Amino acid sequence: AQSVAQPEDQVNVAEGNPLTVKCTYSVSGNPYLFWYVQYPNRGLQFLLKYITGDNLVKGSYGFEAEFNKSQTSFHLKKPSALVSDSALYFCAVRDGAYNTDKLIFGTGTRLQVFP
Amino acid sequence: NAGVMQNPRHLVRRRGQEARLRCSPMKGHSHVYWYRQLPEEGLKFMVYLQKENIIDESGMPKERFSAEFPKEGPSILRIQQVVRGDSAAYFCASSPDTGRGEKLFFGSGTQLSVL
Image (cartoon, rainbow over all chains, first blue to last red; front, side, top):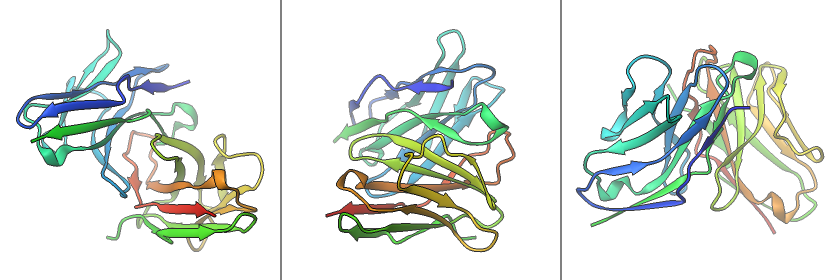
């Protein structure tokens, strides 16, 4: 079964510093990987996805993610964090069953950016 | 083009009552996914529906929960005889579901509180 793991419950970073939010995956077949962000009392917003092509994927709000097949990782990164980036971040993988767009989510990582 | 619309935004029920949560997908989307988010937890998949069909209900509790997506009208997630443990945020997402890794579009959720 497809799954993703987010090993950190929380990541703290100072504003202006680079940030990394970790995600590893376990899939059969080619992975379709996603990052979503959730702000308080809101639904999830799409940040970026990897299906095929370049290992470095650029997304919304200056975020990017690096697909690493040998390490089965898809870490989310940003060169310079903003206080407004503080939110809950979810990594997700497409479920291989039914050839659909159903996603399986990780447990989430809370990012706290301090001024 | 309106996004995914969920209503009500907040729903309060007493134990034993019924809860009906509604979701209107984005225009042109015929695939709906329901997820549940417990406090401080990630999103758990509940059910995936196409128009008039339940495709995957592997995440639905065996009792009291049901979902439908009729030919006309919104998708409905129904919880009968609610208990306090049903208190959670319920999110609906939609996609055109090409099976080619389309992103899911999420609604703002329904916060269910069971007294």
